[in-house]
Image (cartoon, rainbow over all chains, first blue to last red; front, top):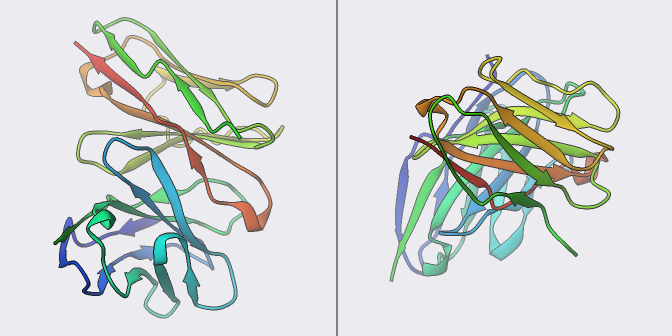
Length: 114
Length: 115
């Protein structure tokens, strides 16, 4: 079955430190990969995507993610965390099978402490 | 430009009643998606529409759930004979169809409470 795993319910990091939010997937073929963020009392927003090409993709607010095909991972990273990065982060995968169905992970809550 | 809008923002209904949730996608977006987000849970795919193709209904949890999209724009998600387990936030999203534009734009959601 196709699935997306975000193994950490919560990630805690101090402001100024690097952060990583993990995502692995189980989807056949070469899927399209996404990260979305949900700030408190705000809707889901697109952060970045991997479609093809360079394995390291850069997105909004200084975030980046690295696609690793052999490990079927797409971890979200940021070199220096801000308190304002505290939010709920979702990894999403769209199988490259011609349809538009997108599978979301359960989400990881990022807490950045000042 | 205008984003994805959903109405109502909140809906409280009694068990057994039918409810209709509305989504207005971004103008020009041919793909429209419905998701359900239960408290503390991730997004559960329900259904998507793309252009004139048959919708992918594979995520609808039961035959009490249905959705339609009229004129390639507005969509309505209908839940018949609501149950308490239907309580959740229902999110709508839209996107373009080209490969470089697969990211989805989400509406604010409709919070459904079944009492």
